[in-house]
Image (cartoon, rainbow, N blue to C red; front, side, top):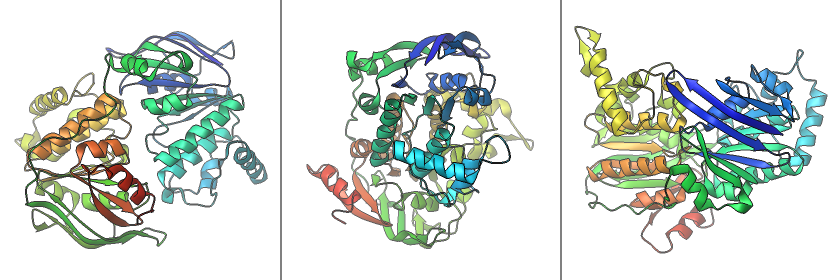
Length: 498
């Protein structure tokens, strides 16, 4: 189906890809593995025509292939579902599906027929009249996949498709990938989750530092070998339990009777009470859509209409804006780093130091040299892979963007509490360990940490106690040292013990 021959890509002095060769067979699922910044997304963007290779050639179904735009790729039978969704949130699902077709619009009767075909073949159905902005993240991704399949592609590129999905949605996506392959289509899936690779892939290619370091037919390799190819050494796939000083009795952050409704009138939060002590890491587990996203937004100071009270160090911050909360000592790692965690048009330095610009004023102007010195130190401390502090933050991989957010929020002056929503989403194994270690460090320094995550093993490793979000309430807490902790959490998540 697709052959890449010695593909290279250079950005200035940085080699994003070097001598990458691989073959994708028809009717197979081919996974591209690698840590954040390994070049996975760059490779798929070259195939999809979003960017051009600096060197190398491609063939598609044994014919020379050199797209100059995504339109060329689509015309050649290639579709791509990007890691960061491309749907227009102000439109309905139907309107999003009609976008981009030749002519004024795709005839509605043809759209309905095509949707029936996709549902019958792959089990993918969507609510055409639903406002896109109100869809949960798993449903939005389903719309993206349906939109791609409407063009009846032969090759489908999926960039980190499971990064935002809960376990049930991941199972459904894997079934869809297998159905597509069984139908004769080729699926290229970018991921770093080895458990998913072992379940869905026919073949794999491993990238490290922009080069192919391993892979092959899955029946002839092991997950352990792929992990070694990814990180250069054997790394444990589980995370060690947190060991540190006992939490203080002093409460860093308290939530009292917080309730809110969604735009459709449904209850998102229903009288939520929560406290996080200094030096304590509290986790919130749960299937997405049970109110945890709204809770994180309310704690960050987003303008969500709600009732109840929020205090930080016994100070009422319920009506305080995000900047005021930062000055009060609250760090926030948002769930969607692209939309809420970074400013894409600014540099890495500017993003790192956004809350601290007062420190770098000189005669009413910003002291850029001092800012660069401070950001260079943070880049080194947090192992951010970049060509330099003045590079646009949008040029970084998702994992390195997350490190910038983490470095900024954990360096807030007078940090008292941290709210980290899905802090490891989309990160590779090494970066996940790095993030968890940083959260442990600030907790050991006496900061209260609230972690909202769908990754059970990570919560079990890093938290002192875990609550479960279920239908707008927080259930528990669960003692993570209990022998039955995981079973208890799973039952609460599924509503069995609610």
